[in-house]
Length: 101
Image (cartoon, rainbow, N blue to C red):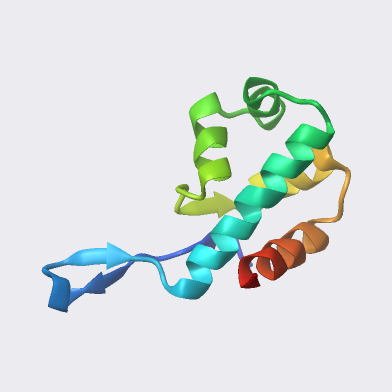
């Protein structure tokens, strides 16, 4: 069973241990960030209000919306989808699609 939607940082030995996400992973995180920002705005929720609904802190929402959170649990993604009133599969598909552009 998949328990998280996680991206693993890749070590770049040639750059002295610098780690970065793959291009695809960055794109999906960017798409997810855009989805979260747009649905939060559509519902007229503040970051603090969304955090309260998800049971997390405002800084976590800031991280999600900036694409800097390295992993998101399936449970949290499901809560987001429920709050936003959209199916989870649609949120993930749209995140990937937005990341392609």
